[in-house]
Length: 474
Image 1 (cartoon, rainbow, N blue to C red):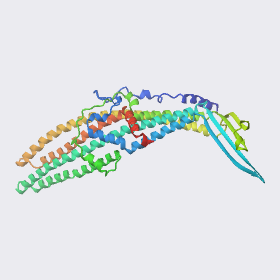
Image 2 (cartoon, helix red, strand yellow):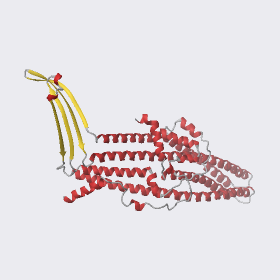
Image 3 (cartoon, rainbow, N blue to C red):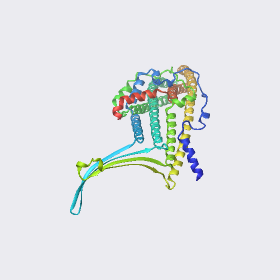
Image 4 (tube, rainbow, N blue to C red):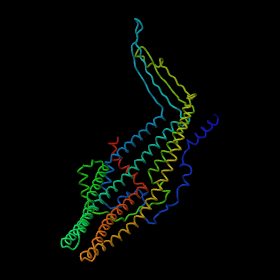
């Protein structure tokens, strides 16, 4: 029992002075990234909006509208408003409480009755010797700041999702356009094979193969159109509109960009240690850990006495005209100490609960940080591999264009059969669609890099949103 109270005492002291990150975290922060890219780029920690660097007015408009209309963001803003109200409520506990009453009535005993009038003012104030109320307020402030970081994280995620969906729409528009051009060439090839068959130069097998190849490529159009429609619907939801909204449909259909853009912008990934201040999810995790420390401090404070100062001033009289006669008034001031004696182990169990939760959040914080490092490493590695893959595909595409021309020439003059033509056309269709997909993946990786390294622009955007929507939020 003695050891337990010693543990409580020293834990209480440490819990009230938590200021650093979880033990051992500094040893897990790498000095640099394994897949770092030595290239100067935009530093997002300077509060710059990353999507503006794509120089795409439509993208700018979509993200701006998402920030105004997205319902998930509106929910988060209301949660922040509630968290701020919780702080106000916690601040009130540090002040004295005053209440008063006044009234009168008639009472009777047998045949006798009399009037009675009374009033009173009560005041109470908890002297926060063991900082229970102060820690409660600190907890609410930290939770409010964590909620604020959650909103910033949502802004970061929302901007990247809108951009990714927007470029998905462009990707599938481009795939459909390219596929239709391929299908036109395949129709020409089919007519060539059919003509040679009618002239008795080839067998019906060539006709069937050419027609099958044409049908297989035509079947890709509905697939791409379905995926295009799904991304349009997803974009509508992100913008806070139903999928059938005509305004969004007109906006998407009026896209002026016919193909995916060439990437010229690079975001400086910085050092791993900079993630701790640039990633809102990391800051939120740390703040919730710190808030839990304050919860533990409150649980420890409950083991110690509470001191409350109370005052009462009241009066009572049978005549309302003499109710406020100070000679008939009563006042009292007293100091009360309350100390838990026996609670069945409930308070000790609560300390253990809060301590376990603190350790849980500490582990969660470390996991969040390490996962953030992993996300950056994954994106940087993906960037390198995608560029290498894309270069190989483009070289292969040039060879296939030559192969198609040569194989068609040889087939037209009966030098070779139809199989080389079929193989070259099938490979060409696969490679050119793969190139479009890889170009999108490279753009998505660049967007992902902006997301995983965080930044400071969310602070400015949050203040702008709250300034514009303060009336609606309240």
